[in-house]
Structure formats: C-alpha cells, structure tokens
Length: 433
Picture 1 (cartoon, rainbow, N blue to C red):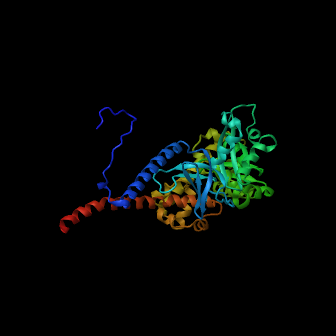
Picture 2 (cartoon, helix red, strand yellow):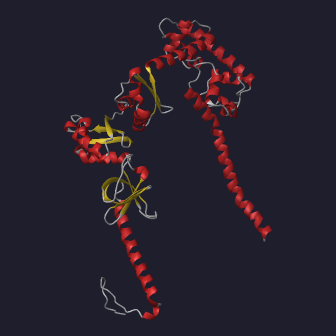
C-alpha cells in the first residue's frame, strides 16, 4: 500500500492470527518456510557445482554405510557410491577425502552430487595437478585405463620435440608419479608415450611385455599380438590385467599368442590355402605356395588382376599366367554349378565373410539358410568344416552375422504390436460403450 516503496526495501505487514489455527499450524508454516529456504540454497549450490563436473573436490566424511559414503562439501553434500571406491579402501566419520565429480543430478532424491575415486578421468586430473606441462598444454593426456587400486595405464603426447612426455610425468626420482600412486592407494601407473601408429602404440601399451609381431585387422578392430613364450604371462598379466588395460587404452580388441602358436596357425592356414589352389588349378605345392606368398590366396584373387601382373612373379611368364587364369575361371564355373545343385540360399551366399569353398562345405553338410547357420554353436560349425578353413573367432563372427536377421524381425514384430494397440483400443471402445 506504499506507493513510494523502492526496489530492495522490505515490506512488513502484520498477519492477523485468525489465519492460524493454533500453535501446530504456526509450527507447520515455520517448517515449510525453512524447507523452501533450504531448497533454494541447495539449488543455488547445485548450479555452482554443475560447472565443476570433471574436477577434483575435497570434503569431510559425514557418514558411511554398505552402499557408499556421504561427503560434506561445506554448503552441499556429495555421494561416493561403493562401486566408485577403490578396493580395500575404508573411510570413517571425519576423514578428509578427495574424489572426482562425474555427475550432478538435480532430480535425484538425497545427495545430488556424485563423486568417484575409480574413474579413469580421476587419474588424469591427478596428473594435471602434479605435472605443470600438462596444465600449460605442452603435454596432452591421450587416454587412461584403470584397474582401481592395482594398476593403471596412461598415454601422453608431447607437443615439444625436446620434451620427453614420459619423463616429465614420472618426475625427478619418480616424485610426480609417486604422488599419484600414493593418492590411489598404491595403484601402479604405467606411463606410455602415445603414437598415431596403431601398431607402435599397442606395442608400447603392452609393456612390460616384449612384442615380437602385431597383425592388425581393421575390419574387426582387432589386433593379434605375438610374444615370446617366456613373455606370455607378462603380456596377459594377472587375471588378464595387462592385456585388458592395453585394450581399453588403445581401443582395439587384442588376441595374445606365442611365437610357436602363431607359427603353427600360419602353417595350418598356408596348408589349407595351398591345398585349395593345388586342387582348383591342378598345380604342384611349390607353385601354390609361391602364389600365396605373392598375395594370391584364392582363385578369386587370380581373376582380379591382369595376366601381366601374374607374369611379373619370378619364374612365371605370360603363357603360364593366362593358363592359370583359365583354370581359375573353370574352377569358379564348376563351383557355381555345384552351388546351384546344393540349393544354398542367396542370403547365405551374400553373408559377409563367405567364400565359394566355405559355401560348398556348408551346403554339403546341409547348412543352406541363414537360420541353419544361426542355429549352430561355434564348435559345431568348426567340426563341419575342413581343418583350418576358419578360426574360432571367424566362425563365431559368421554365426552372429547369420543371426542378425532374427533381431531385425523381432524389432519389426514389436513395432507392429505397438501400431496395432491403438487400433484395437479404438475398436474396443464402441463395444464397451
């Protein structure tokens, strides 16, 4: 009622007691006001912490139970879930704790700030604190992988040619990396120099194991790592720890094998390939292995090039090259006739990874449709095929590809059910009326 009131001034107005039904109502009003004020303060603090996601905070343990730890941050509270705690780590009321804010959820009931001590990014942030070169951008952390409390791997890259990124992160007499290890309850950290070359980066990521050879399969995003027999346990690590962390860090699926295993597998593969070429082209083993060594692993490969390219192989000429292509074409035509008689469906023939030899081998065993192949287990498929035609991973991949249409059909059925539901409801409404 004051026309001269100014912004920022207070308005005082007596409220008649007739609006309050005794002391209980007054107490209830007081509690509502306190709660509203508390909610506003909480919302304000959460708004501040939204910008703190991805940073390290420090707080005092307020309460701990089976599910996790409640941490007092001053004007807010954070929740450290049990599965975000380093194994063997225990806290008691009053302990000071540091952790990484990985989520702020204003809609959650109870604590709305969630923190972690096992998050890979927590390791990165700790190194940022210890290594000034990371803070100023001279060194960049390219990735991190952790088995919390036990072991971790971190990849670093230097933008200064004269600066060793690994040495900078280790520090003089290891003081920098030791500070991080202490904060993480003794977690051992391998610091690896990042490389844009996938094979080189993976060899470094497999440390301390010595790698003899790597074979990349970019289509499957898989790398075969060959190590000496005496390095196999180092390469795999305790409970697969080393290879698992290297896989996470590099982003590749990793298969580890010894030199002898790789040699045996390669010999078996060569035997299968050379046998196929010998049978299809009617040539001896020496010529078959020569063709394989030059990259012609099947009759299809021979038909993809000109006779002159084949004649470029030492010991061969144009006449031999032409004859090899004629025999390859004849073998391919014979295989096509054989396939037609077997009655293998076009869907199975078109499956990614299928070859003429594989289709014939499956057709002769009665596997003629995607469903037939999808019903098989990996070991069942391997028993049907000639030795060495597929390895276990290739067989598993082929079976999973054959099963893909099942999931597509299930999705279509669900969509049809959802479309039919409104129509059924509409049809039922007049009857109910």
